[in-house]
Image 1 (cartoon, rainbow, N blue to C red):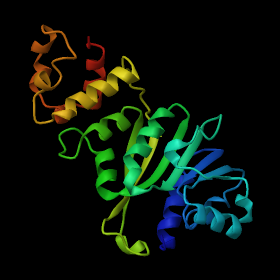
Image 2 (cartoon, helix red, strand yellow):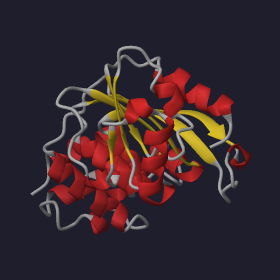
Image 3 (cartoon, rainbow, N blue to C red):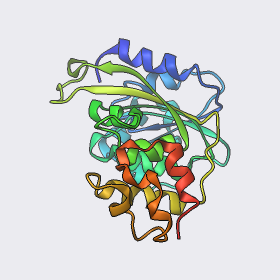
Image 4 (cartoon, one colour):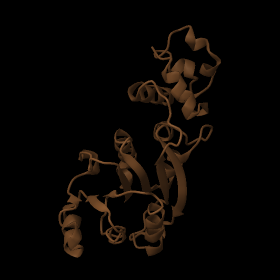
Length: 238
């Protein structure tokens, strides 16, 4: 990331959130980090898997000496015992897995500002009826209000990637969604979208009693159901 304006925009969005503990995912060469370590009265940590980058960061920013977790984000334990915020230019090859990891910690996460490949960012923010609306959209939106903030041009990076990027913000839902359980909700959503061209009646027939499958909602396909539709259905499962 070479575009300082984009870095500052991300930090500006971040400072609209209220937090005392901050985790940066994938600091790399420190494009964002150099701004984040200047935020006052923040308990800051960064997680970086690349050994050379860890050495570089510790050498360039001595304040990071004991603040870098040298692991893959997907392998780390929860970084703080109290509520925390997450920021990062997320590695695109594992960005969906990163979101699922964040969902595991959803009760502790106050805010997420993340840069993703544009298609992924759009998918996370998509509403029902949109062709990119899918499993990730529903699962993330079940726990967070999603705001698509802005696009990031490929020329903001050196070397420029072959894809555009987008920055989104996640905040805990203002209206908590009532679901039967995380496990049943996840199973329902993944099953429904597993055969997204089929009606819910065909895609999810093993999850519900036969008589309930006659309900009109089962004439729809997964992409036509809202997050709250899925939530209500989770209580009706076998």
